[in-house]
Amino acid sequence: MLAITIVRITAANQNLTSGRSREQAQHYWAESHGKLVAHSSTLRRYHHYFSLPEAYENDPKPTFIGISKFWRDDP
Image 1 (cartoon, rainbow, N blue to C red):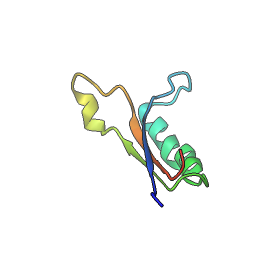
Image 2 (image 1 turned 90 degrees about the horizontal axis):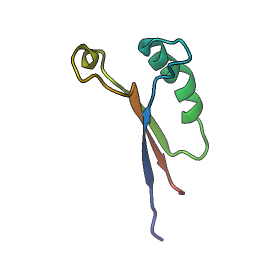
Image 3 (image 1 turned 45 degrees about the vertical axis):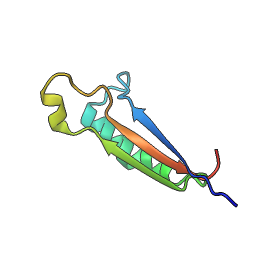
Image 4 (image 1 turned 120 degrees about the horizontal axis):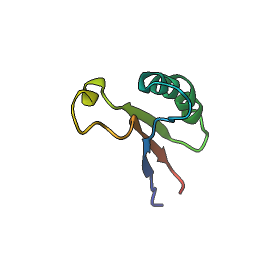
């Protein structure tokens, strides 16, 4: 039987209406939202990667606060 793993990469936007700074948004993502997603029974694996603070020192600045990467066995 052929096993297929689906990998999805999603960019994470900073929610500008929440009033959180980029650092606060990344902290929320790591400590709250990300942990909820990571415990989903449909995921094989979950990682999130943050934009580095020094990337914001020059132009162009990152348009996302990071990316999420999801691994699933079933589409």
